[in-house]
Length: 508
Image (cartoon, rainbow, N blue to C red; front, side, top):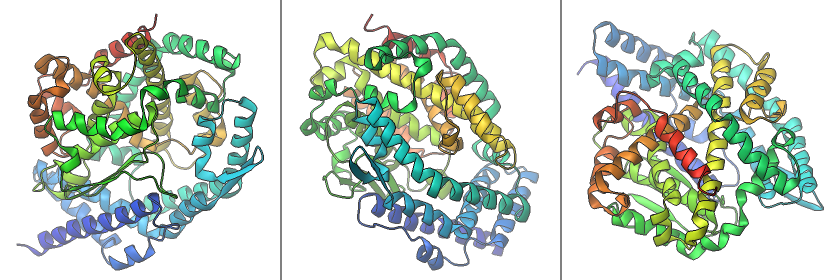
């Protein structure tokens, strides 16, 4: 084995070990074991791994593989290079990044006669029906962001970009992303632009009606916090009891032969504890041997939806083939794992599954489907607007004009005035994973129904098909899986649009 090859093997192993150590640290923070993050000792333990020379060597090897026509080697090296770049940058700016996280975890907001943790803001507005009280919570949250968070984020972005572009000589974020992920941001933006155009009246009518009934205002006069209590829909809570949440999830996976509750490589944290994040989440600490699924069972539709979503991630990573290269177990196209997460989440829109697992009266199913469809459409339009903004931002340098671009893109997508204070709050280009997953999941679900019937989630044959997909990890793109399943050569928007129209028309 050549010296260069040995160095690459060492780099791969080192990056995986570093990633596992960091993931464990973040996990412990989210479950309440660690009150403050300090990633410095982890980076110190792996000193000498994430160096500019190592990045230069990997880049040179990637270019050599491309010149020699070694396509598979080049593909894996692009992922390795991308991961190493992120690690080099992460180590250099570790203190600033930890500081931001620790400010968020320790800050408090005071309004309406109470003081609450800063990170409780989403739950506070979700459960607050009074508009003026929500505005007070928002103003308190804004104060922390303006004073403590936004200036630090802006400075970190400027310093990071200067280092990546000037010192490391890297291309724009958009070019890096497209080279690694293997799909065109422009083409995806074309699809989402069409989706925004064709769903505009459907979206406006749905939310005009809801906002007028709830707060006496049209969509154009809405504020972001107005949507949370409507989405919360507490009148659905009795249909989704806390005690049945985990049982329904495990029962579904068992019927498919996936046996989530007994997989030895999945750790299940199902207890309610102080300091633990209340929303279900999944941490693939080491794929596939150490997968951690966490929930804080509270009951209600959103809690059920969240756990089912994360359970899809869990079985995907747990059944990933351990012999795959590090890059294909851990990186790849994140739209694939989001597809599997949406597949299980979307069982909550299946009348037959609801009949077996929840307490939704048959005559109320149309109302529930209408609610789900309405907020899925809002999410689709949000991420479509965010893509137009994030793609624009990823192609250029600096933040000049970013606030104005954000406001234009998000106001156009959501049809009410966006706030420039939120211009650093998108998910960045990770949002493309959700968009692509929404498209492919609708195609995959239609295929499962065609092959295994409407109750496909009861058929072990469907479970075997899914296991075969899961084994491939994150190596294939959504388009690759679509071709392999004879679903066409690309991502088709028609199944998704038909789904939305069916759900939004269910209660008519």
